[in-house]
Image 1 (tube, one colour):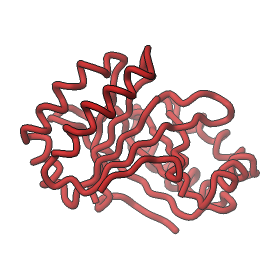
Image 2 (cartoon, one colour):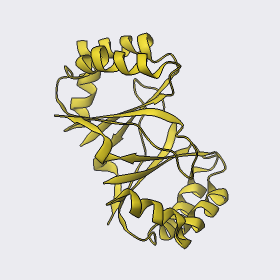
Image 3 (spheres, chains in turn red, brown):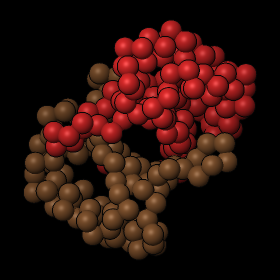
Length: 105
Length: 105
């Protein structure tokens, strides 16, 4: 699998963020061609400190080519454009290609 | 699964970082009690931009209690102490509990 990982900073208004994510952003992401799964997690901090990030979205594809095509699709462009509507606090995006990962255990 | 996620900023000297991670840090992490797996990924950026992070380490445990116990173990304390030896550029740590994630697909 190859994951598009989006790490959202803490929003000023979490309720508004959650509502926009659920009602507008998630339906756009769901239209990514080749999307295999989406996992949404609210991270916890370590050692009693708050997490630096409010939400982690992991969008999985079978191949890197599928992920790249999704980003260039209409849904990919729409989702990028939609970030400005709810992610003003900032978002960090990167791609994790598990085929290139090292694993133990 | 519950993941301890470590996102390392780009080091000044990647070769020295890699050597320390492989030779010193990974062997400490491998001693975490209850550790199920470790996945190491060098993320790619999106849209031709470089990734904000140099390395993502995902350390998986069966339960949140196992993860918390690992952090409080000798290996957990040693690994935290070892960060100052190679991660001067900074590291972001958080916990992702997949049992609390929302998934689609």
